[in-house]
Amino acid sequence: MGRYVRNIFDQYTQPENRVTHALLTALNEDRVLLRHFLHDLVGVKPPADTTKLDVLEQRYPGLEEEEPSESELERRGIPDGWIVDDTGWCVFIENKVISSLTSDQIARHRRTAERRGFERITAVAIAPAFASPPPPETVLLAWPNVYAWLKRRSADSLWAARAADFLEIIEAQLIDNEQLIDGALTMFSGFPFNSERPYTYLDGKRVLGLAMQDLRKRRALVDQLGMNREASGRSAITGRRADVVWDFLTLAAGSGEDAFTNHPHLTLGVRAHDVDAMVTVPNAVNSTMRRNLVALGEEGFQHVIEQIVGNLHQFLAEHPGATPWFRGIQRRYPSQRSAPYIDACIEFDLRTAIRDAGPPKAQPRWLTAAYGSFVNKEHSNYQMQVGVILRYDRCPEIAEPSALDLVEQVWLACKPLVDFAH
Image (cartoon, rainbow, N blue to C red; front, side, top):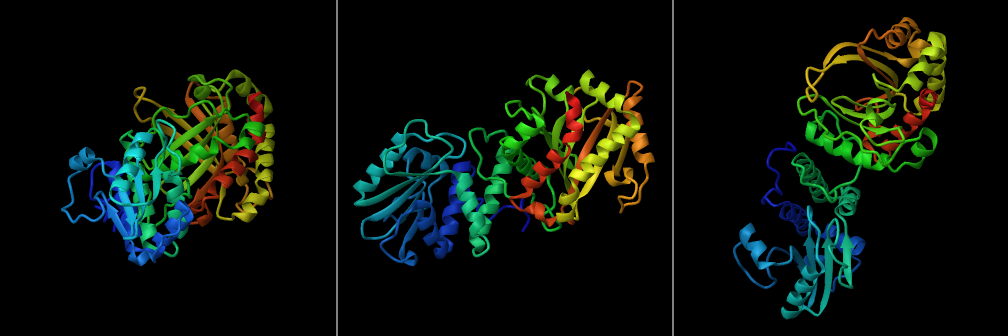
């Protein structure tokens, strides 16, 4: 089943109803998963075996009725979900995705449960934020934590895997529609693309956003490279028709436009066949860094590359599918927001610049051409990138949550280049 063919959970139009339906369907179909949900996330023990509990969605317990419309659900204000038995015990669930939850909503649902004869009541709120302090004895959950729990349970539960997958799909659609503002549904769990799950723009954009949120918090990038975690990255992640989405973390102290165009930055690209972690020296890099790099001369620049490859030695031994990489690109833009024309591109394995470092075999003329194009730009728009390419088919470890540790290690290894910015 394709990820964007109509999903088995896709019964509603409102995001809250869609994710609630996915979670409750999974819990209803897999009663072992339900038992773990109550124990692991809610922290309650049901009075009966979970096979005897009723899992209800958008309806009052004890009433047999046709499924109401979404507009009717909004008007009636019924809790999104119930887990109940016939002894006066219940868990009710209220969920928000793109808006905050109020304490009044939880209080009203608790009164509803009391009026229906429930005496042992647990309120569960899954929401990005509360608009007011939550009522006491309310179990607060966040969708990223629910997603992480579903991923952990996916090895033993097909329904957990299906629900986690659906959260990824909904999140990608909400990001694309610019609806997901106050919180995320998932958390970074690796770069998942392979032959069975090909790269798509929507999925790539979702994973890239989660990755950048995590990387922005990395203290080592601040302390060792001067990453400015307060500065924003790209104002809009575009590339729907391309095979890559990318974003950056700036190494500039400021947060204006020049933080991107005039200073080196840490670039993460999620591509159709690979992930690349690069330090980018932009075309309009500030005069200090340009002057420092030009003063090095080709031999000095080659020494910088040798230092970077040396820093990556243990990394490459542990991840033999990774490739240390140089990319130099000359571009021109027909208009400010249009995709650029690529007039020239030179790419090579960094190890080709170092004699006796092979494989691959040394070919220093690649570096000569790349560095010479930077020194003698002749008014062309030319940028350089140094880092590592991690192919999905050669580096299966990047499908793991620890993949961002690899990205961080690559950027830190490129510090000899970053140091010339000062």
